[in-house]
Amino acid sequence: LSRLRRTEPSVRSFIHVADADAEREAEELDRRIASEGQDAVGPLAGVLVGVKDNLCTANMPSTGGSRILDGYRPAYDATAVRRLREAGAIVVGKTNLDEFGMGSTTEGSGFQVTTNPWDDSRVPGGSSGGSASSVSARQCVVSLGSDTGGSVRQPASFCGVVGLKPTYGRVSRFGLMAYASSLDVVGCFGSSVVDTATILSVIAGHDKMDSTSSSHDVRDYKSELVPLDLLESKPLNGMRIGIIQETLGEGVETGVISSIRTAASHLEQLGSVVEEVSLPSFSLGLPAYYILASSEASSNLSRYDGIRYGRQVSADDFNELYGGSRANGLGHEVKMRILMGTYALSAGYYDAYYKRAQQVRTLVKKSFQEALERYDILISPAAPSAAYKIGEKINDPLAMYAGDIMTVNVNLAGLPALVVPCGFVDGGSAGLPVGLQMIGSPFSEGNLLRAGHIFE
Ligand code: GLN
Image 1 (cartoon, rainbow, N blue to C red):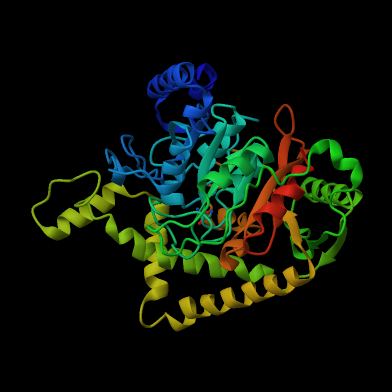
Image 2 (cartoon, rainbow, N blue to C red):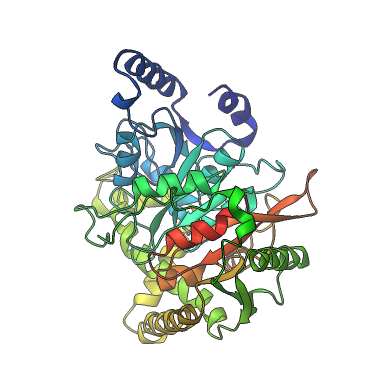
């Protein structure tokens, strides 16, 4: 907690810090342990977690990074948050994000700009930038994020931490503010694969409050990791790994490419077979994603009308109330996405945009399925570059969207993907971290964590 207090003025990971409450909860846990023993408290007793502010938390503000929800306090915890709390974890605050998850730098927050702990002139990535920076700066042990098109994986890469995007449906979305419901997943960050595996076992599983959550069995992911002192025994023997060719070409920083190649040879040394694989539909994913995500957002965000939640404006009539709330409460990027999505869904354009994008989604899904019949894991960079400067891309939405090329396909296909730090490129005073993305078949999180563990 003292580290959080010391670092927060420069990192600004949190929209809301609950350090005093956290301290009280921790003291209460200490008292229970002293009187009733360690078994009286949960397995995560006292573990500080940061929670992305688009996940509802009872008794704490939940804004989604948007001014339109200023002052909103939900009456309930998101399921992932509730499960962490039931295991004894302490929510230490709500982390900053691009408004409603729309962005890749966290500069799109309605509240503040978060900095990258490796270099405070750079972005932490986004949209879960606060969740990534809080773990990277060791302000908390683990954190929750959400990933619609890369929002856990890209900031994990920029901040040099582990980030997991689970299979669609692996973790309940109950209490997650919807951005694009067919793509959204709750994910997690840790400073190690061990921590990430531990958290996944707690938050995963079926939830009757989310009909899209899966009842596929939840494993004890941590106990299935190969101990690091057994690495000599070639623990990846028999594993087949494909490097996605299309992700190591034009537009990707050379330092990123060489870090990924070094990581691939490391995987090979530990027993796996590594080959290059081509996914020809790879580059189609980005435009399809932005059509589909904006379309779903335009529908999901219609609930923010200034009546049911958050900030109220005074108005004489209905249109003035809606118009005034949205004009003042929503930021530029969110308005642009709503307009884009409404356009793509309008009668005259539906076939040309939304329907085409759905067809591309099917194509992307099929090409991943085929590749994952031949390979256990597909690898790529998590982002085409390391963290860039604050302000560098904020006025160039297309350049910002292009940075999501490595991650969006995985959401279109609903697959799990793990990002682990695997190298550095020049920049800042100590270099800037690079993340390796490992993609697997649905519900193969255990396998991804086992492979990722060798990088620790
Ligand atoms: N950067 C992407 C977007 O703006 C992904 C965001 C996310 O995963 N929430 O849509």
